Image (cartoon, rainbow over all chains, first blue to last red):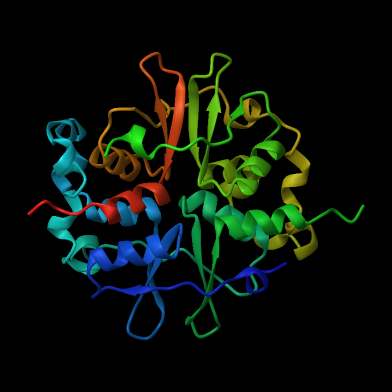
Length: 152
Length: 152
């Protein structure tokens, strides 16, 4: 099987979307991460779910996790409301790694190795022009691996 | 809301389980990771899904991803069959980080900060004796955050 055989369509976001919207897209789609597209429908960044969440956690808490224990329960429920209107671009910053992506002809082994190495349960699949063709989630890859049987 | 309010029961594995079994447990449960318990039901390791997958990718490919492109499609589908009988312990090695876990009284902010920092979409929740009480997944945390509304 190849990436094109197991890729699925997923909702995406852009750098101009508010971070609150990005989190909603991920939550409603039950996605393990998010693909951020540029204006030409090319993947700009592929974020694992935990790193989308990171965008919503104020930096002060990330730097000093002991601080999180000083926030009472009521406020701890709504911490991300303060920054939900900031855009994905504002939260990510300008230095972004190369997006986690493969061509449609990538094998399951290539997908698995990339996911493992980049710690990303979501991989963008692009066509020869570099445009988004679909995505492979960890769930989807595991299902495909489970179905495969050696010939011998 | 606190960790105890949103924790769910999840299937777990032990260090002696074959890696093939561990991957099946994760795939069938559609879990974003796995909790590995010791013989006293205490979390020993909490592995993000991508790192469970990593255990199944032969080391040679992890070190030189260009090698993955030398494997044909049929063999790339079944790469993990070779090592599926190795135990989780054999694949993980002896140096494991502190498990990603919180007490039942942890707030949503504490959970979010820990997930973001440890890049783990799964957090073990333990009782006062350190025994596994449940788990919080990224999906579950996002749903809880989406429901929370500021008082004002």
